[in-house]
Image (cartoon, rainbow, N blue to C red; front, side, top):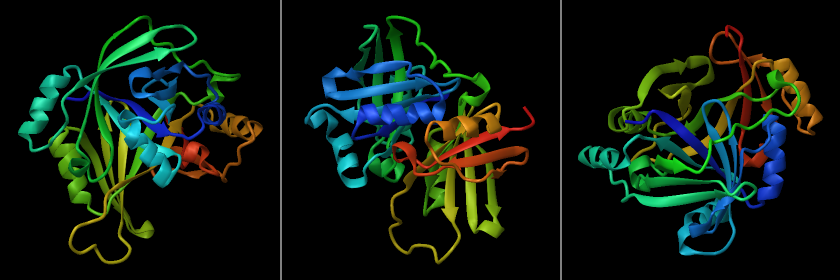
Length: 290
């Protein structure tokens, strides 16, 4: 049904400042600087090997971008949505409705790159908030483009630059609810369901298109009674080929990092970028066995 995560969308109040921060995080130039003119939203997109990282900010006040403005007013900058890519959005919507979900009718969206004049034409839909426990999940079908979608070019050493997304993190109070949504209704493979007793956490790893949706559930304290609170986005993890070079690059960009440590997955080494750039807790990871 879905063959990849097309993009993660990060809401920011100041697009220019966020663009500078993201260049420091990724070590790459933007691939796309433009707007969704019909809804009054400016955007800056970075294209990695398996993912677009898109910064968005409202350019005007309108009903069409009310959800984005509310996100910024209530929670400030941070992860706003995960966009799943499908080859046939109308068939996908029909299937999801048969499974009890309520995606809205598709609408055509056009994004324009201001420097080049290139455009993308897409069909977009999204799950109702109550279907996704408050998480914003959008559905996308790319229709056509006026030119090739360019990659984000490395600034300096390629091995020190982020090459791909690794995982996006969601916290949940109801892990079985997450399994029902992602595995049973969205057909995203549950690759691992593991409890880490020493950390008092259960982690679910859903794999799609080379990316992982990692859903974490705290085992501390009693389970919530009655209606559980909404799930919430937390952070992003990015892959690099040379984590030592990446750490040096990030520090030279003026960002502070944690000490290195072993990752949850055997054969990985990680560090975090302190200060939550663009409002997102950020992890850098190297898979040493690749």
